[in-house]
Image (cartoon, rainbow, N blue to C red; front, side):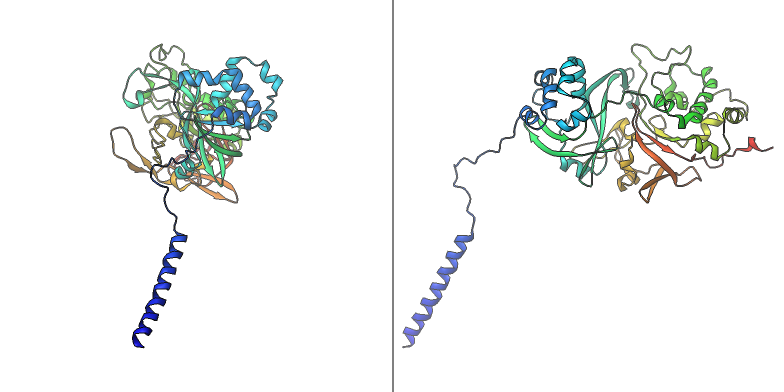
Amino acid sequence: MKTNKQNIILYIISIIFLGFLTNCQKQEFLPEPIGKEVPEKDAPSLTDIIKTEASLFYIVWEKAGMDKILKSDYPQTQFTYLIPSNEAMEKAGYSEMKIKGLDIEKLQEIIRFHIIDQKIDENNLVSANLDIACRTLLKHNKVYNSARAFGAQNVIIPYFYKHYISFKNKSLIINGKERNYLKQIDTKQGSAWIINHVLKIFDTQMLDVLKQDKRFSLYIKAIEYSMPNYFKEIKTNLFYQFKLPIQFQLDFFYIFPGSVFESQSYKRDLIYLTLFAPTNEAFNHIGIFNEDDLIKLYKRVPVPAYYGESASSPIDSLLANHNFSRIDNSLFFNNNNLGIEIVGTQGYVHYSTAFDNPNFKKLIVRTRGQSPYVFYPDFSFNKKDGKYFVSHKNSNVNDVNIIESDINSLQGPIHVVNRILVPKGFTMWHLKK
């Protein structure tokens, strides 16, 4: 009896165990048998995507012969393509009739400005968490970069237009402006972004942008008055001997009378910078209301016989905290995430997307031949009630309101401020009677 009872118990245990094994086998996902071909997910061609998603842009693409250009000039290269939707093209005035009336060179220019020479997707932008400086395929015919900043003499590098791109709150930010996008698609030729905007080529120098805006009439006069005393001193190599007048930095084509600086082998170098441009209201606030007041400021002390690296006119001294550029040697960094770097002079270009970004307050700097180190910018920013405010460590004037931001130019963005970041120790004593 005992033996039969034991057998029954063993039988029941065996049944339960077999049932357990059976259930486990139903829930397990077994791998495909070795040797079976796994279907490959093939990416669509770029041309097919453009034709399907943006038929008007495809007309531009086809007439410009871009397939042939990419195949011959950039074989097997992955790019990023910013493709305006039909709605965006129509809004910008590019109807099918207008497109057919444009010459091929103009069409190629439009397309090249919408192509970035590296592959960037949403994950890259989210991981970078700061503007990525991206070179387009559009080259400027008159503007140059040079390798002098890296110790190489007489190395001339053509200037290619850039876009500064980031991703914030699920929006694509291009050159400080939010650009709605419909979708991002991986293609055989790279990453395609269908955007609801046609990007306008910014071909205006910073100085010309300021001259076209009446808000900056006193600032323009201040710049002009700071120039004459440099004329006598400017020789050949400005970059290493002088603290450059602001006009030289803002205006690439400005040539000093009698200067032999520019030559075929030694071109004028585009200076990248971010400018906090003071309005007439900003000058009024410290007692400067017209040209006569600027002249009094300019003539308040004898003019130095020699403008050394740190010397400047009274007007230059007053405005010293309003821009940072390559010449000031104040900002040179990269953001090395997923292999995408911000390097060299584009580190001096910052749109409003950086102002409330914690990465901007503590930057990782790497110059050639050196180990990375931490750099703290001279500028700091606050955001209150949706408005940005800027301060400078060398000024006692804090939280200056940025009343407009991200005005584009060849050199970089202009941010408009309604107060002057007066340097510490600077007084307007010449106004006292």
